[in-house]
Image (cartoon, rainbow, N blue to C red; front, side, top):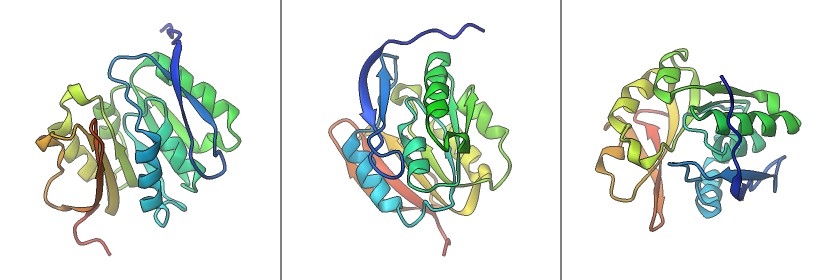
Length: 193
């Protein structure tokens, strides 16, 4: 399969940790909408006690900003899933340049299919930030219930008015933030210590 080349239309940066200030290109791709620096900074301040040694899945990797930020700040490993071959190639090139980038496993394919192939209770933390127009929420929740650990954390970024972007009731809202374009919510599975 031929990988298409993507022209960058902007950049985001890794905010903290060992790869702080590393710039990531943001190609012009339909549905690609990286989390803002402000949202990521707030999210990773919330997650700081959780990240050291965590096993993470970034199900809609895009630019890789969420998964790479997690690795930069101490996660043990991350599985990054991206279906767009150009974005996948960009991520592969970025990981090849980062010392320690081998802690990321990069998968090319549909996130729903890739999640079904993950081991049960494999992940401590999941980042779910799909293309907003895709409408994948109801299909995601059962897959995440299987591949996330019983005490896992779940970050969901969605349109501000997306009622179906709320996971089932066994996920307890821990913190939330919003901008005019997006809402970010961090959940923990109910009953976790």
